[in-house]
Length: 348
Image 1 (cartoon, rainbow, N blue to C red):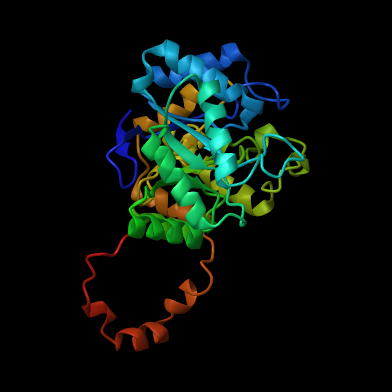
Image 2: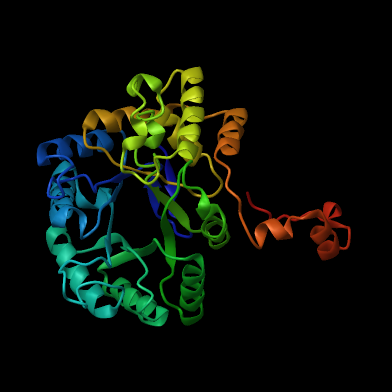
């Protein structure tokens, strides 16, 4: 396991993050406490130190399990512990959810108790509520950092314009900025390339993609004919299980067969090799699944393989990106000198 800097910070995190939404069975699926411990141990044994959970996951069991595991494995300080707030913890109560200060304060104290710790390494805003002023959010999070309850902050599932405004506000007012961005990103969900990922590279935000395997689609589970000999694979309820995504999954399967590895490993490595700081969040319901997926760290995809997968899953960037790339527009923007200008700030 190698380590990466968490965006514009000095914090070192594993190149794979352990997602623990599967820790607990309260939601009708997931892993028992015993199996969750095996998953955690497998990750820690591989050198992993970055654990992601949330106050809502399995009604709080995920945080309780994680807190117990990190305290018994070695020492609390070894792990980079991340959890989240925002989603409802008490239906019918408008202040038991959202991004506002009241929910933030009650959520952090409840998480600290469940986790059995007195501080969180990385505290995520889980989802933008479009109600709370960004000034309130950033000042309230900064207060937690100053109080020592939180070391770093990140933001998840939020439009790029909100994140940009929030970090500029923090910079101008001397508050703590976001250093990480958590989004859905995979070969079957590449729309973040329109705004979120360019923003992350420009602001030096680490990106921790969730659902890196496209809800199982990129594992070969649905795309290999041997798994569905009677052609019933499209009857699954997943909105992502469509013909386009199955074609992408088939391209992943082909590369995997060429290399002699699993489709999931190929999908993870395509993600890991994208520009910027990309740290996929990988979860599992069995320790054997996690161990198999961690084998992606043993090799890299070739440039040719990366290009094939990128072409198979390409999405339109839309306006204004497609408009600004038109030859005539490029000509009038740069006065016909675009090819003569060397831009050292160009990023992938």
